[in-house]
Length: 407
Image 1 (cartoon, rainbow, N blue to C red):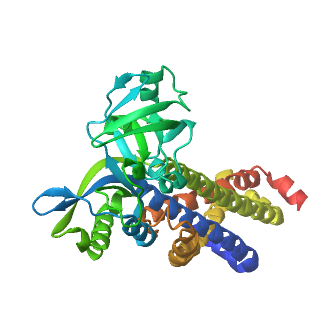
Image 2 (cartoon, rainbow, N blue to C red):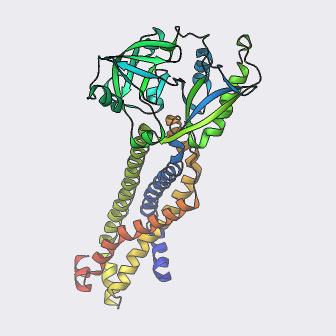
Image 3 (cartoon, rainbow, N blue to C red):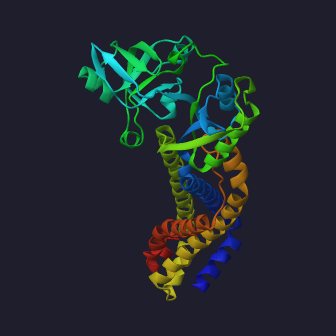
């Protein structure tokens, strides 16, 4: 085998331009494969970062009691400036609520007065109608969306759009028009009891920037939850409303549940498919490039191969010689390709590719790892064998007389 590699090195001296071009083609392919594999492994290992943790946030005042401390101005500032809080919504729970419809009373758990973005915050699925909008919030519209289970219990169908129900809560009674019906997935049903959602401004007077509310729900990535909590505490402590007698306060964080947001899940899957396709394409192009140049080289050396067979070289000797050439080209190309990938991952993958998806990949940092190196070695060997095996057996199949005659 050492002699075969020694002979392959001699070919580099005889045909430096051709062998260099083949090695460069392999180097480009290996660099692309190494960067793609590194990105895929980084995104996969950080997939928990795309799981959204949902927390209920309350203001705890001394002595211990829940106080109203959140207003629209503060929430807008947090939503605009926070880096690790993805979404934030006012959520006021209506305790001991019940509804009346056609003189019949129904008691359910899960009455909430929420903001218009609550739909995306917990990833609700609307099956009929629509969720209420920011205009409904601003205009204090008496509209409501209900769960499919509540719709079936009250109206016997999930299509209850246009029906009216009267909501009785602590200190208020209001009639609401049903504008939408939603459903929860199995995970949400196990973690949440949500059946009726109304605009938070419809609980009393019209909400505005100065109105105070007692509860928030926030979403943040699983890996960034501690930083998100710290961000919220900083924003809140800088905006304590002394006019409303909110003193000596702290924030209470109650985890609600963790879910993989469907848009993030599909995005990661599509990212993997796209860049996996690029890795396979780079491998195929490298194999074809080396294969074609080896075939040309064998045609040019038909005479020398025939002479070798005449002087006693076996078919196995010819196969080993051609495979050694292919492996040597792949190893040299793989070495330089790995060096290039090592220095190119940060400027190309981290600063260009992932920077364009900063929201999805804020927690992802791609690096050239030892696992990537192992994959690169396996790919290099695979390229060398795949691109050289057919030319090797093609060269070995020539008989000495035919090889000399063809030359």
